[in-house]
Image (tube, rainbow, N blue to C red; front, side):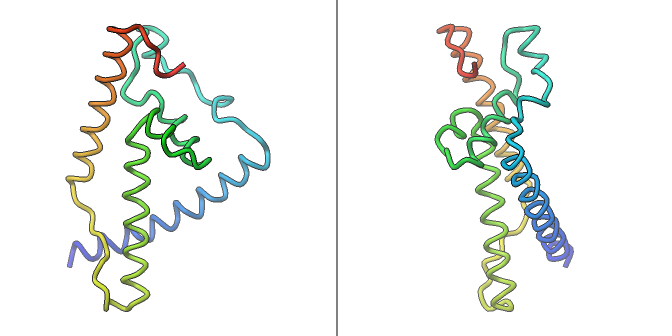
Amino acid sequence: MKKESERKSLYKIGWIFLILGSILYILVKVSHISAASFLLPCLVHKYTGLYCPGCGGTRAFTFLMDGHFLKSLYYHPVVLYGAALYLWFMISNTIELLSRGRFKVGMYYRDRYIHFAVIIIILNFIVKNAVLIIWKYQMIP
């Protein structure tokens, strides 16, 4: 019963994020505000020259919102992974809700989703910094 309650709560939170995110997206597009105009620079990159585990995340999210999935994947793969999880969670639970439980396809939260995201972040961090150190190629300008 706890899992079911958790899933329903996450589903409601998912709708809240969708509504608030849509409003924010529309406001940003209408006002032509760039995310870079109000974000602080990455202090890890500024002082060490290396990428932090989150470097590229904002660009990846921006590219994802503009429909550039490969660019989003390039800048930070965890953003696309998270978006895919979110979409499947919301779609599968909506199908189950609308079918009144006839189609038991609703996704449940599992800790392994977070573990896999952490692995993606660590691998992204290692690869980007290895490319920077070994080949002197800046993956994020």
